[in-house]
Image (cartoon, rainbow over all chains, first blue to last red; front, top):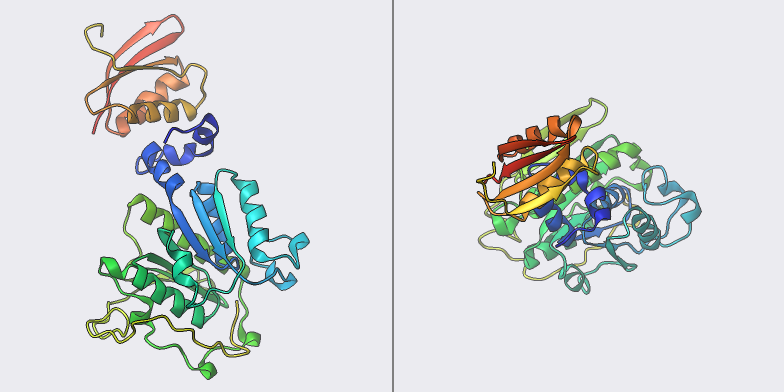
Length: 269
Length: 79
């Protein structure tokens, strides 16, 4: 790929880096990343990936912007309240970087459409806010052999990891084998979140996505990075591939995608 | 430096830091290891910083020639 003068200038701080250079930036410009959710995690992740010049960014979200989102979902502005999140996201991202091809999916991602949606992407970044979607995305990525950059947040805590079972790493079900029963999921009223925690984790996910595209560094595979904002600490928890995992284990029993039900007042962050 | 065969020439006298290095780096990426790039650059900041950055990335400066207020640098591409 031949860069234009505008692109050389725009991406100069990447190109300067020995580990990236023009060749690495070219990989970024050709990369295709799918982001599940234009919310707390998807917002910062999408902003940085668009700014970085990721060639194609797909974003799925069936929700509209609500005033209560704006405290952390930095893709959206006050004037976007009531607008579909994916279209608000498209406007913000194309204003930041018109080089990026944006694909908006204003629909609920289900077992019916998920394979079709993620098929054209290299990487899936999960910024969803509920367990049914997490399991669906994890299982779909496993079957399609897509690298999954996972993140989650609650209150003052967040965590991120990379699932790449097709390269020997664990999957989400190795970490959390079963979807938690409704009573164990915090309710809406318990689901506060310090805004910048979403930014911290979303940006960590964007970083891992770019590392995957570039093939550099030591990825968060088999390692869960756990952020504690109140104590200002990151600690690391090892995640082992579970040989008995129902999805990626030796005697896996899950052979098709499942739509789990979401409890009516379960957390949605 | 006249006996070195130059494979490409780049004038960065109209660029400022860090675009001086960015343009040089991109040009070097189009060459093979061992090939030579002649870089025309200004005295002062570019002459101080561009060669240093190139060396840090594993390239070699195999010749320098003063030409009025400009300099001609011959860079051999590293690995």
